[in-house]
Length: 264
Picture (cartoon, rainbow, N blue to C red):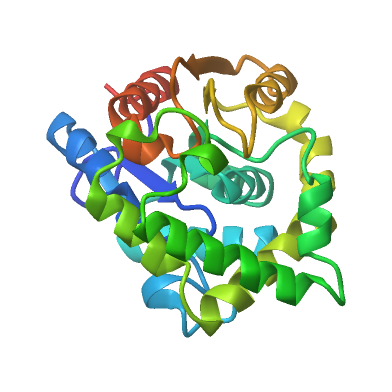
């Protein structure tokens, strides 16, 4: 059996993407908590309430995630990594395997990343300007609801409050700095993480939107194939923002991995 949190409940550690905040998992947490889960959804270093902290790469984010578990009195957790946060979940499984009971990788970075666009965003000279432009475009488009073509299908279910929260997370100097640091970590750290996927031994599930244009289903399939015994769920009609637009599907994946990991 797994070691639960301090209150005896099974623990889910949810790691957001970029730009992002832990509050983006509020709807998902609302589904999991009545089912008996304790949900920890921190703002990663450089984002949200942790914007005062220096932004970090995958390994340093994994160390910070382990400290979140320490502070909560949780020995292990089912770790949910969304988008860029999927790389943090993989780093946590590699660097702190004793803390990870299972993995749920949602619209996650994987084989095939970083893309040519990622490399441009991380470039020494052009990168800062391109990151600023990308976040400014995200901020304005989410506020004006003009983002469906960029993000893929399935966003008709995105609540206005969720769209505004994503827009707010994209705003300001610190968001630009954090985004640039994390783009450069994609180039520097992700290839090494992906070479170690075969060593993942915990139950895992990869979830992707059929219409995701940022991290397409082909990447999810390759990610699932590389992790021994991993499940794969491709969500019809969905895009990239699965925790907000398809929280029920994500909650089902979490419950399935938790059961396979020994939670009852």
